[in-house]
Image 1 (cartoon, rainbow, N blue to C red):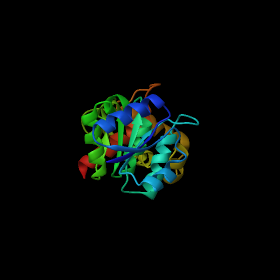
Image 2: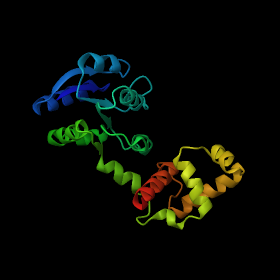
Image 3: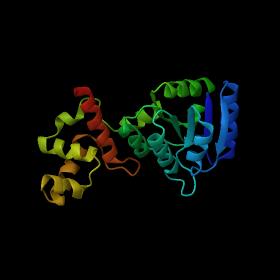
Image 4: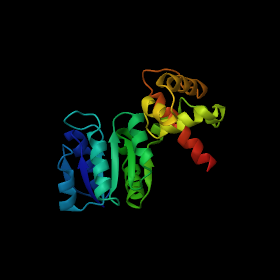
Length: 219
């Protein structure tokens, strides 16, 4: 399998290149920044690209945006996003696309060569890979049962618009209600879904995942 690596850490690049080579893959290019990715993919035509989510210049979501650009231009190119930490917001942005050939794994997990190869093979075949620790974190604050059953019809309607990515103002305009009323509904949603206020969890993300899972289970 022909692979391109994009990570600003030279240690990570060297380690991954060695692991991939040991597994019989060919690393055709390595990058420390995301900007040249499109040109390098065009030149080398890889089977898969591994991209660190947090890359220069701001070390926030450059890798995620680069992956999105690759998805648009090469929809059948396997793209594996790498992260040092569990970031629910980034996971949601990946899961919301519902696209094939895309994965999200923690860096600790990819240091297991057979597991890394299995993930890449699944992606190249058109599958999706999401780190199990990530899934566990995303749903840790949720109730196990179909949580949205506890919501009123209006609260379900508000939650649906949250899942669509609308802000409080956008939801208010859609439902012809005041932003204060929408804010009250959202607080009730959080309470009923068992999502306490926390500095480490985005409750809108967790509420959205609750809605998406429930919709999938009821389809």
